[in-house]
Image (cartoon, rainbow, N blue to C red):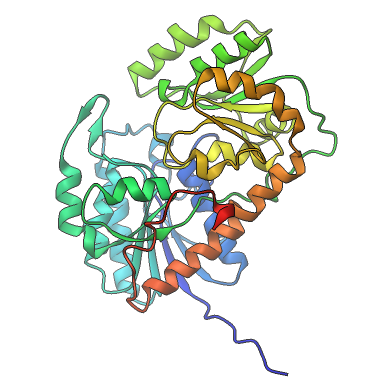
Length: 391
């Protein structure tokens, strides 16, 4: 009987952003995805080194250059020097060891842009995932043009992975990026387990970061017009005066602990309880979100999603199976009674197939092996927008 050829065990360096712990305590989409990727790679037998502050909790080999993640120690986003130190020391250590098969950097904030010139100079194979969206050279309402300098200078030398086809198309139009492909974010299905005693209750839920583009004010309007309870939880960006003003002036006065209930920041257990019992998750986003991790979290717990069709939402939500993709608030309200007809087991199965940490890790391993022999195909991700189930 012919033996199945085993794929090579890879030695992989992961360079984490230094701002939030891994895994994150409450909010941190990039850090959550990175944690899931690292744990799955280790579970599959790969030799993984994580470069992250010492407060990270990981099964991988762990290299750190200071103790606390930066926001945890009180460093503001605008203070870049310790972030630069972390990335420089990580790349320096990688160069000294000089035996990695692949180096994987993660770009989610403006400080992470330093990785582009650092990785471009590496002789070993490397990629960088763009977890956020251009422009990165921005602060509040101000926007600069440093993205052009960085990507035109080093973009061709660093294969870039997008987290959705929509993000891939957007970034491809910004400059000469070496687009290696698309890998959807993934979550641990073991971590997102529906409680045995969970019963669906007649409330809807909104979870996320309280900012206008995330649409919490529209979720409130939809709930009021539909005459249903809405539970709301999430974080406030205290580094942004505009975000704090928006929360305290437009949202907080509407919390009545009856129809509109404020849950505060939610940890993992809180999210599991909220999603597994909610009738549906309302996601009236008002921006071109490159992925939308909270939609995947909801669906993993059997909670259907009703979302505006902005950004990558039509890729993430399978319309009529795991939720509904709508264009207006009126359509969202019309869809709300229809979620009871959806099979919540199928909602969860949709995530297991397309957005689990297992599916994400296998896709990244394909990218790693594609990059290692220097056979990157920059146009691989330029596919027509459609649901992953239709691939």
